[in-house]
Image (cartoon, rainbow, N blue to C red; front, side, top):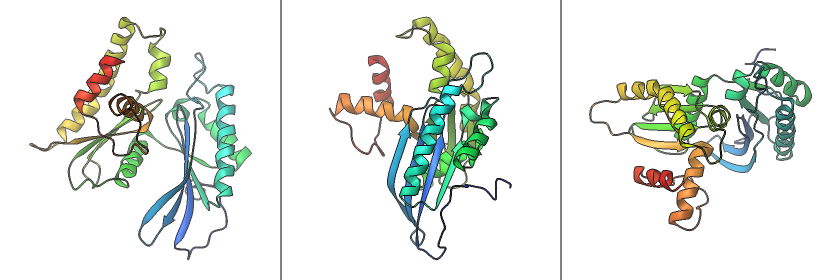
Length: 273
């Protein structure tokens, strides 16, 4: 059966005429696995999140010689996926849509891992490209905020990759995915705690080199006089917001959605940490 016909094999009998549907979405990342379960009103359209699940499985911990996903990481991931599946089914989700990104994409045994998930759990997982990952991030941000035709640069720093997107609420102008991620860079560059000045310099040079082309592409697609707004998503950005909120407010807003940081704020966090 092809992937189009099997977007998800974890399904419950549906009633097409219902105005409300309950769907679950699972993101299998390099560092963590996330699931959200939402109640969707097709007539508005609008949705409400009714459950969330997150587990730091560190699937990106790969064998240093073969670059395979390790057996331990695979077991952690499958245990988390089984728990997510049971939660979604208990909430009567009629469909579970799952995607895998950087860690599974690059591992030689990534497809074997997905086949095992399918066999053991009956859960089909879509393996998405970096470009498709960036596109889905853009659509996710669009669903949560108004762009008002103003250009926005979206940055998503994950465990294995960083996505940069330029868009104005319509078709994205640029989509990029680079091999810059928190788990990846920690494994490849950092051997000291705290990080030494030398390792930091190597790390900084690598990141700048990897992001040079995507940034040039964004600059080339901005019109003269346009002032883009920067939007950050995912765990690394959330951590920066939490650090700033604790130091400046003494508390962490819940949710963090919409929390704003200036360039000065970011530089202040860098100096203090």
